[in-house]
Amino acid sequence: MTFLDQFRDPAVAKGLVQIAVASALAAVVLGVSYLRNLDLETELGRAFVRGFVQVVAMGSVIGILFSVDLAWSGLVLVAMIGIAAWISKDRGEGVPGVLRVSLLGIAFGAGLVIVAMVAAGAIEATVRNLIPVGGMVIANAMKTNSLALDRFKGEVESNRSEIEAVLALGAPPGKVISDYVTTSVRASLIPMVDSLKSLGLVYIPGMMSGMILAGANPIYAAEYQFVIMAMLFAAGGLTSMASTLLVGRYAFTEAEQLKPFRGEEAEAG
Image (tube, rainbow, N blue to C red; front, side, top):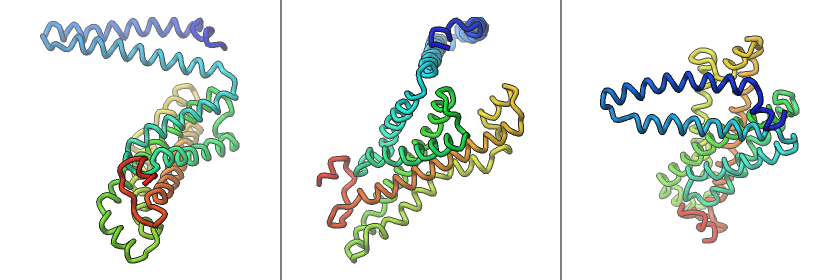
């Protein structure tokens, strides 16, 4: 199905009818806001229209991606990794080499998991499966990387005097920084560990719910959801471990002195 064919799908016309009904219900809220002088109708109306435009635009972009050849999926995923690294670097702003570290860490963690799971058949080698699931893995790796960098930066800044004192005694940088690397990795994985603990007890994840609603076997839906969670955990763990180890190396000069966390230009100092 081409991109234009997707607009001719009867389901799109059905969706427009559903949008009209949902919009009518939303209009009731706007009307009540006007009658009760809540002065929210302008803000609510703009938010409603903006949300509709944004989600349709995203659907159109996904539709374009689904209509391209499989070979383009790799380029799309590489672009996602680059964007994820650019976003994630803000959490470690000021840390030497943070963009490079984020890019290498996310590419390693998410890339390895995606390649391995495609080889295992957990992710089908189709555009329709590779981009959404791959994007999910990359996004989780990005979040984990951000948490790790943020914690690492805070740990080093809070303990700079102690680190420099131990370095002055001749301790190797890798050993000095190891505890802070470990703490950062552990902190970054807490949300994922909690999600695994509550899986199936506190909430039914979205992908599992969607598969069940689509008519899939509930047992298989549960199994596949666990596969997804395991992929996210592996990608996040590998990313945070790689990025914190790398940033630990970039944090020191050739003379084994701790660099000031002032930005990328500190690397030249």
